[in-house]
Length: 352
Image (cartoon, rainbow, N blue to C red):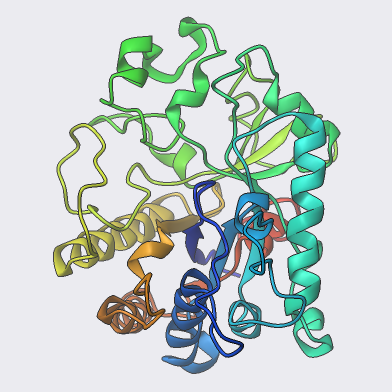
């Protein structure tokens, strides 16, 4: 069986987001509405071959201190994510063991509130999948890798290069200096680092394992998944540009100044999917191939009314174009991050 490129859209709900009721029993949270709209549009636009959304959120989104506005005890528009084949992932920047476990429990509870029996059967187990967020940069003494592995949260989407802070410079890819990482030049680039001309790219399309916060990128020469034998975290790779807004910008300092997703961003992402696909063809049989992109939820809905923004319809059309470009489901396939991570950890299917 020929290898297929795995594709996913991730929505990264930062720690600053919180569940906000708009008032009245019929009102719904605008962030959750935007996520639900996106999942429905990209999932329904192309039927069984539709796109899938993996949503990352944590306790800050679900635990409310505002009176009369807790996370609802029953299904909301977040159910639409699950009904369209997506999943929830745990997100937190706090790497303390107790926080990781409580955060995981809270997100799992959200899954339980949103999933009906039919949805639950269709979503990969465990329901809340892996983790995003990575290191606690305010407390560099915490070995966020070992703590995450001990907590059983061993699968992550690729974190940013600044999380190499605990790694000796000689062991960092390209020997990145602290200035490279903290002055904004490569701060928000996805690990393992900037992609220079002529540098190997395959690490961005197959998993690697992180042994500890001070020993990254080990076992990269291995061609078999090793989660069962390596006491570390599986890191799911990503091409250099990992956020759709501003995707078309040059590779200068990271900026979030863009207030929408433009046609130029969609075109640039389209080109990168094609480049990743062609790379897969060259190295077929030796790497597990993946491409995914982050979309901040604020770009998906009006944060006052909850109404869907035009960009959601544009993303539906973009998914249709991707499907035609890389021949979904024959040469590429949409998966949520649970499915992608499970694929990487299964030796018999790792390359397909």
